[in-house]
Image 1 (spheres, rainbow, N blue to C red):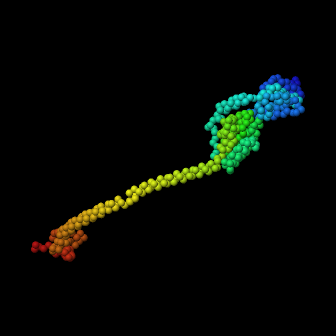
Image 2: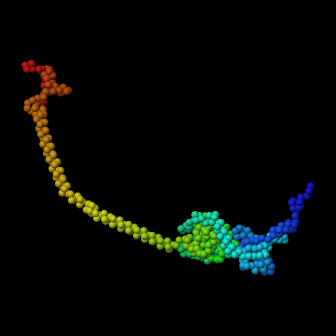
Length: 412
């Protein structure tokens, strides 16, 4: 049975020195490389000829350890400090004694303002193409926020401006303050963390990101892609107040509202109590004036209506026709009385004629009406209708008598 190759099994391992040397040999073959980043930490020891630098990627949480001669730091084309953007040329190096990796640098160049601006412009075009600057995505700021989230440098002029102006405009305003670094390599992670914390707070209705003026290099964190994307993801409206009016970092384009200065941001997030009171007083005065005008206009309309004859003297039309009404009433009464008299005379004539023609008048002249005293009380019209023994009822002018028939009279 063949023995496994060295380093391929626990029975035949490589010693540390061998692995370290193999890693060093492999890294030495990589050759030289140019690298760009921000200086996150710079350590130049007084008694050492080597300077130690931590170079950070501004767009990601990654860094490299850099070593270089200390004279290279002192003779750099720009003063090196934390947050400085640089380009370095060096060779990857693996220190076998400590098992650490670093980049041994032999050249340091500053990133020019023109190059920085060109990169910011390229990032602006990228974010614009993705729609992060679309005005339709902008969220409105509440008229009176419950709590204002404020991200700014500790004890900075921007913090003082925002809070003092806001409190002067609306004394009851409340702040959720988050102090962060606002320049340098550590600024973006701290600002992003503060943004996430305030955005998750249900009491915070608007977030203000404020910083005073500065150079292009000082304001670089506010054109960072990570920060811009984090602002775009916020569900709470974000107001940016970075630098002064001419300054225009990319986060201003992503934010829901861009304020020219921190003072302007304070004016935008809270209303002016005095101005609002004056506006309310003005609206009350205008509404009262409008109401009075309406009342006066309606009063004039009523006065005009009341002054019309039909309303001023509602009985005038009737008074003017009183005589006519009286004449009409007299005429109607006369005609009615005349009609009544005529009809009364007619009734009298008819009554007299009826009396004359009636049976009572005939009876009064000596005639009588003979009826058969039965249920039908039929009038006797023939002698044959009254045989002997028939009960008869004889009606005369002053009454009626009852008799019994003896039969027809043969003598007649």
